[in-house]
Structure formats: structure tokens, C-alpha cells
Length: 375
Image (cartoon, rainbow, N blue to C red; front, top):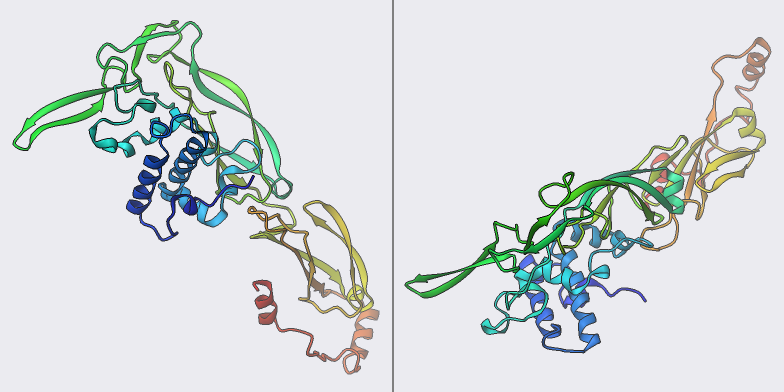
């Protein structure tokens, strides 16, 4: 089932400000909050949907990628998520708990670690890696197995509830002011907001009970990604202490140069050089594409600079809008040295009507060809 547009979910326009996005999310979250809609699976689904939309649109970089590439910029095909798709309620409350401050007139909702002093879940740090892809891999999609070193909980590590914050991860202070009593909350300095402290740990573990372990992670990369795009593999970052949730792995795409093809958006360009006899008599040539070699026919009398378009032989669009084309640029190679017999032949052809330039209306100028390429 196709995902709904994030702007539609929050009921806002693409020009909405950060404050308007936050306000719209608060409204949706309040309406569909689990505490207000107990045992209502549809309300819970909409609550998660709104959280996913807010996670993307509240982040300037993610919002820009979403505006350009849509859901494909985050979802890919198997394993990538903008955030909400793989979120559970703990994820949402952990990441956006501050958004709910003030809901319910002071009583607050009980779910997910805010209100009622319930235990928070800390999220581990993200890992960032760079993956180099060939043009063929980008065109066809690929699954990469990458070795990474990530922090995981050491075997034998045990935790106990933090005695300072009683597991809430926060310290609440009440201050008397001229305006009355004011309540503020700050992250617990003893447990760092985890709500738990180390009870026992092996010698090789760090102060948080974590060790560095090398793992092989399988990453499915969809066809059509572009250089500089960042994808996310949920839960494959560093683990968090205690009952925390793992961070994410952020995968930056690096496109490698191709030996004979040049990419321009979803289109590809290929420079084909032919000899003067082949241009005069016509020929067929085998050229590279991202799906293998193909043979194309060159008509007799072809002019240097002519562009042959092979439709659908380019890169798949990341948003699923078909494929680009392969544009073959014909270059007639003029020999720089000739023997005596060849020179005499071309000397005799100087005034021959067949060798005089006679451009036809169908022979476009250089600027017209450039215009066609970008239209």
C-alpha cells in the first residue's frame, strides 16, 4: 500500500514554516494519542503516521530530500525508512516527547516516558558510512554487504534502576518565583537520561557496558539513487545502554565515474567516434549501456554532432517515473595524416558537388541540439 503524502497527513502546505509544522503535528498527536484512544488500532496507526511525517518535515535536510525525491529518498526497497515506518511507540515518545509538553492541562499522558515519571528509552548514536556504486549498480539496484564496527551491549552486563531519578531519566526541580511555583525538568546527570546505571560489566566493556563488535550488514540500495543521497538503515547504529534502542546507520551514496558513459539526471551520454568512410557509407557499432552492450545502426551520410536517442536505456527514476534515455553523440573522426594517393583523391573532390556542405532544414544547429537535450 502506497504511503500518503507527509504534507497531506499533517494537513499543511509545502510552504509551511517550522512552527506551523510543529503545531500541526501537536494537533494530530493529541487527536490520535493512544491514551485518548485506548485499544483503537486505527488511531494508533494515524498517530505513528503523523510521527513519521513530523520526523521528516521537521528536519531541514530530510525535508529537502523528501521534496525532491519523495518517499523513495528514505524508503528505498527493503530496509530503508524515513523513520516512522519502523517506529514503535517507544521510538516516538523517546524522540518527540518534548512536543507533548503541556498536553492535557498538566496531568499529561502516561505513555512512552513522559508524564507520570515513567522510564525513558535512550537512543544509541548513529553510524555514518559511505558506499561507492558503479553506474551499473545504480541503474539496476544492488544489495551490498558491508562490514561495520558498532557498539553493542557486552555479554554479562547488567543494569539497575538509577537511584537519582528513579528510572525516569530526568530530574524535576520546583522553584518558587514571583509568578508562583515553576517546575523544570533536566536530563539526569547520573545516568545520562537512560534511567539505568551499570550494575555489573566485564572488564573489556566501556563505562556504559558496551563493546565494539564487527558485523556484516546487508544494505539493499534501490535503483536510481544519486550521488550525495543519504539513506537510512533503521536500528543498525550503535546500541544504547540498558533498555535503550539502537541508533541508525546513515548510508551516503558515492557514484563512481564510468569509463564511457556520462550521467545527467536520469539520462546517459555516450560519445561514439566513427571514421570518415563509415560516415559516408553507413555502418553499425557496438556501444556500452548500463545493461550490457548493444549494436546500433548508423545511416549513410550521418553528420558529426548528430544525436541518436535510445529510449529507456538510461537510469530508472528514483520516484518510479520510468527510465531516462541514452543519448549517443556521433563524432566523425577526420584523419590528420594521408598518403599521396589519399591526398590526390580528396584534392580531386574539393569541388565535387557531393562533398560540398549542403545543410538541410532537418540538420539542427549546435544550439538547437543542446536545447533538445534539456527539453
